[in-house]
Every structure is written in structure tokens, then in C-alpha cells.
Image 1 (cartoon, rainbow, N blue to C red):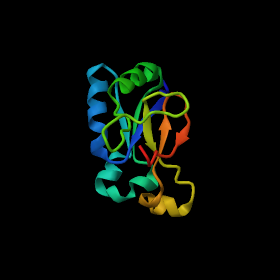
Image 2 (cartoon, rainbow, N blue to C red; image 1 turned 180 degrees about the horizontal axis):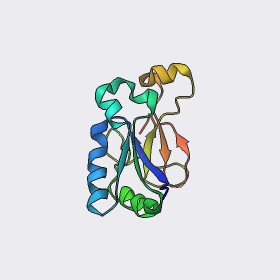
Image 3 (cartoon, rainbow, N blue to C red; image 1 turned 135 degrees about the horizontal axis):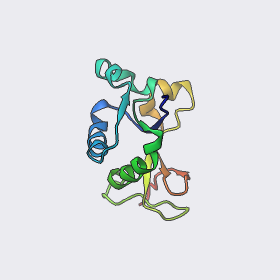
Image 4 (cartoon, helix red, strand yellow; image 1 turned 90 degrees about the vertical axis):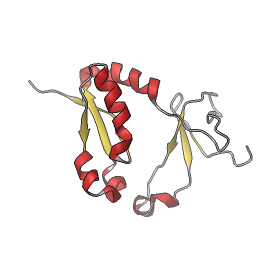
Length: 130
């Protein structure tokens, strides 16, 4: 029987995925980590291969997303307040990096920080005056 997988999230470092992996497994959802061993042997290639991919069976996708949304950390500003989406006013944003050019793929730390609202999907730059 062929099983289909769903990539729930990708993490820059193998250690970053462990809390979510433990939570999902404690809820009875099998978890698979793609590229974990590759990054454990050479963490500097994380951006090149897209990080560690946390996969679940496609049949477990909805429940896994529900659990992930309960425990995920959302972006905060320098004062510790959640980033507020200027479009829908949601407080559920994550750091976003487009990495559209070869330069930013090779040197991602030079790319300007942006945030992606997980509610409406809009991508914004941080407000420098807040």
C-alpha cells in the first residue's frame, strides 16, 4: 500500500523540529524527518536543501496542522509584541524570506526581513517606526 506524505513544515536546523515532532507523536501522529541526517552532518547547507522537512501521512494532515498551529511561535517585534498584519489585523505572522536570486540563496543573511501573515498571506516589511 502506497502512503502519501504531507510536508507540514521546514526548519533551518534539526534541533528546531524536535518539540513539534514530540508533540505530534504524543498525539499519535507518526512523524518523518526528511534531510535530518544530512543537516546533522553539515548544518551549513540548510538553506541550500530547504532545511529539515517534517512530514506526516496525508491522512493525518488536518489534525497535524491543528496541533502545529496550537504550538507554533509567531513573529514578535523588538518589544516582544506580536507582529500585526496591516491587512487583516491578525497576530499570526512568521518571518519570510523569498530567496529569489542566487545571491540571497547563497547569502540569505543579507536579505531584508519580511513577515508573512498566516491568516491572509500578505507579505510585509517590518515597521521601522514602531
